[in-house]
Amino acid sequence: MREPLIARMREFGTTVFAEMTALAVRTGSINLGQGFPDTDGPPGMLARAVEAIGGGFNQYPPGPGVPALREAVAWHRKEHYGLDYDPDGEVLVTVGATEAVATSVLALCEPGDEVIVFEPFYDSYAAAISLAGAVRKAVTLRPDAGRFAFDPDELRAAVGPRTRAILVNSPHNPTGTVFTRAELSAIAEVCREHDLIAISDEVYEHLTFDGVEHIPIATLPGMRERTVMISSAGKTFSVTGWKTGWICAPPALTSAVQTVKQFVTFTAGAPWQLAVAHALRHEQPWVADLRLALQGKRDRLMTGLAAAGFEVLRPSGTYFVQTDIRPLGFTDGLALTRELPSLAGVVAIPTQVFYDRPERGRHFVRFAFCKRDEIIEEAAARLATLGEAARGER
Image (cartoon, rainbow, N blue to C red; front, top):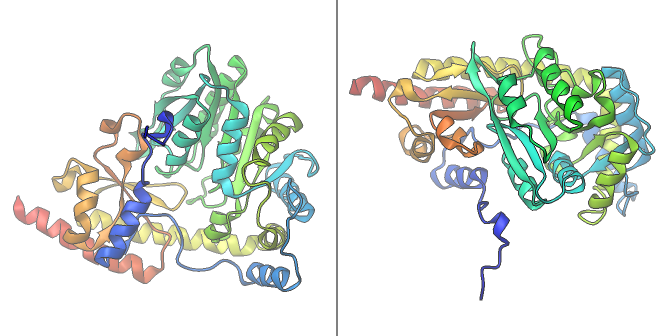
């Protein structure tokens, strides 16, 4: 029997998240790998979901999404960013942002088209591009003044005659970078000059720190008409298991994505949509408190990692802190993270798995801080022993 998996997907096996989560369970380690919170979202939103289930809202909702949610998403875009989207034709509800990205790439890219991504990139991007038969072109984010940034000249050089889209992710997972207006303007200039689509993953839009502003690329001149703007409830409201996301885009782009989406999942879970519609309009104070709490967690974990001997890069958003492991005497993040449970009782993610050129990220390891304070403190205490052992060997 021939190999059952199609050739273009053979590079994708079990995700690193599954491997490291299984390792955490098997060893009883603290899991600072996968980015999910260990507390629930706003009670008012959770109550709306329970009411929806009890009220019989359990059958197929409309394919584009429940009107109340589409209207709330459109209201939210206008309220926060001054962007006008018609809830009937320019908003599409998806099964999380992962489906939104995948169906956008499948709908908008022909086989052989090129999609520019910024590496390190979230792992589903590579899989979605391969599923479409498209080609990845990676532009590397490198540490610069304590944050990860790209070279605009390298971005320009990545564009070719088959380039179709740039997949933008800001706030950026896994580096924690929030692209500046100047950086977004450089991306927008390339998109306008070469008639490219921006597929913009903004799931961490409300989780930025130190007063750093999230700027949707669709707000820049000439970009609304060529941007698929993606977000979700999972990170904003700490309900990653609800898998409720959305896109906002001009009618032609929205229609294209819906054409593919209807044959993938058809629609998204009904009760969650009503609950998220409520949350978008009424739970922003809760989100503001979450943002402040996460900033404190970030600082607590950064302090612990620095004390353990890691070089720590300060993230401006997301759930994640990137560390350089070389000051501790390690050079291979994948090897270290596989040993870390036995060395310190903590699980993290090797950043190199998010690169097309793994050697560029081999010395970075990602830690998640979206956990309860006592978990972060215990993890920091355990990691301190790693630093003590490394210093003792010198």
